[in-house]
Length: 471
Ligand SMILES: [Zn+2]
Image (cartoon, rainbow, N blue to C red; front, side):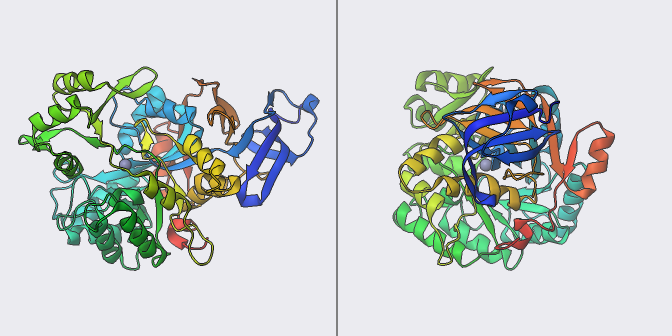
């Protein structure tokens, strides 16, 4: 008689939430973990995965990804390949994610934040409260998890920013902020302003290191220490940082200049004109990397090809600049407060369809560097982010938890097997999962299910987002 649909055998299991680390077998059935034991009988399993010599982690929960800016939604595949089984899409729109998931889904779960895009989703940078409430209500009813404020790229006035955070809190929705307003850019001043504008409300501060590039307070290292001190003084907020040396932004032009303020700052910093010509020159020189979608994922083009592609696509492409310091990535990933809590709640990637899904590759490098323990890494990539989103059955592997896991090679730092909901969705680089689940709120679940979209309601009221530092 088979007791398990799948048995993960002889792997080295790291489950930070349940303080379990060592050689354990993991029995999965009906999409759940049913047994964890040093020795489970393979005769009782329909299928057995030999994880000898491998690490077994809960499925990675990435609280900052982008999936909607590519035409083929290849980001879903890239995430499954990187060992991610659940993610927060930080830009939306939820409609685009649903379409992408139907066409190119890899079996993972996604919560979606709809962006406040001045001139597109709201009237402009000074949108009134009533407009914000209306947009949020519509977004939630269509299945979105909350709002994304893209202040660094598309700034809103400080007042509209603060009102948007308030409105999302009052509705019990999620809200994440790429700091910056019409008053302050995407820099340390922008982060400090964000902390003030938020007050006692709840907020997810995106990619902490992005404000620490030495633009306003001397060195990047000085700025990250100031940022961490400020975040430690605001323990009711959640935050994440990522490892990638490259940022991610858009080349898209509006009246002859890049629409994104981040793109403008990066061009200036490199000594380039803030114009179409400046973009082409920066691409040709290799300072700016141009992203291109391929069937296997998104890649960075070589400089000459990048400049040509930029023109061919009429500047409607994603681009990256090498502006993230290694020192700030290290500190944001590892620093703790005086109570021993990580100051930055989670490790994320700002990846998905941007080629920097580095949780395993760089995270395990930090373990080798003795900057994180295995358990600390799993805490920051699995358990803490699952709690941020109000998903108590994810991010850990006790009996009863969702059967989401990743088997990783400790030498190559790559995922060799990704399992979501008990199904193998990726094996040795080959993605075999399809479809997926939208993580949503009570207000969106019914509409999603009525459309045939698989939906799961998160416990946002009980989440770390609404209860930090405790939940
Ligand atoms: Zn982002």
